[in-house]
Length: 471
Image (cartoon, rainbow, N blue to C red; front, top):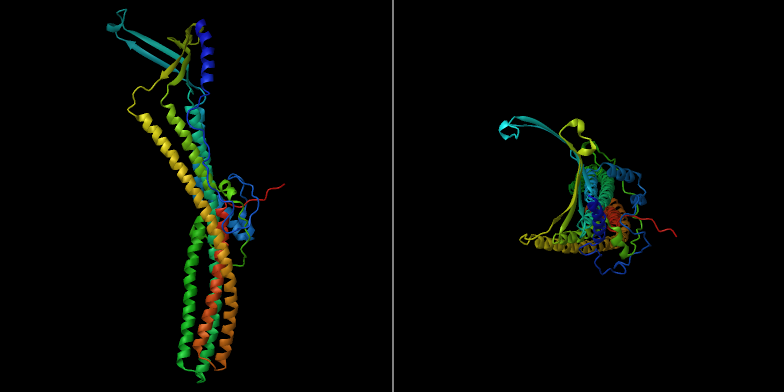
């Protein structure tokens, strides 16, 4: 026993020294060609990068209290977001499970038994009844010679970080979808207001035309045209109500409420698109949570290459047991009834029919897949940002042209109405000019809604809002 005690410290020291060896490649982010500036020559400001940085309530830049309230409801009650948070909890638990393998495991395995030995099998020639009681503490510990446990912990931690990034990405997508649907709904409210105002104008026109007809100043054709325009405008207004109801129901799902009990009162769109600074292209990779998730999945796959490599080398475990055993319960804890056992166990693969080689090949291929997915996600990030920047630039130019068109079309409609009342032109000219004015006004409202939605898409493409770094 004295020799055993002298041998144990030597074994522990040797194991500690060897445990510094970790097989497999250390993770390094692949090099990427990152542009120095966006193609759209977007304005930028220095951002505080990092996908874990707080994004803040970026939607407040629109200054709409109802939108702020909807965003808060979505963050608190959306069920897809709740499911994603549960996945984060699962991933963290798995990481703790793998972390536990770095420490010894000790189990208490108490047992008690009673057995009867027949006379034919008894040395005394008489049947006997025996009792047994044991109370051992069993020890199990894998000496991490080649870093299998360490690489497994690295992988599970990277998986947990990827899960958290997925959650943040889903939260950002949810916030953006709430804002986009809200602006689309308000844009429809503005269109409905325009159509309802046009319906009233069509009614006035019809009354005028019917009055002129009764006085014999015009024919039945103008009356029919006026009635047609009134009915057509009413039909368009009703058609927009269907689209509005669908957007309202979509918002209900996003904020976690039953569509049957969710209602938003109509309100026209009275917001201007805010200026959003794009930042530097290099900060985009550090800010977007979907890019962060792809990178951490790549890191997890890299660590699993090391886990696969350790299968080619011996696995050494230290097992032990210490406790008490007795045939009588009253003497179980007597010092002479103590028991103990301690020793290493070595497992060395001899023939595994290529299983370990195939597993290593699979791990390397999984890493290459993760690298490709990461690079693809980076390309998507830059494409989405350029799309949003281009959309805002083009829609701003379109809005300016439509504003000029609205002014001219309203002027033309007013002139046509005067000319018609003076008997200089037919009602067809009035109808045509009023229809053109309505089309221009609706186009301006639609583009305003698209500009607001594009600003939301830009914020989402940039990974959310941020505050300027304080110096």
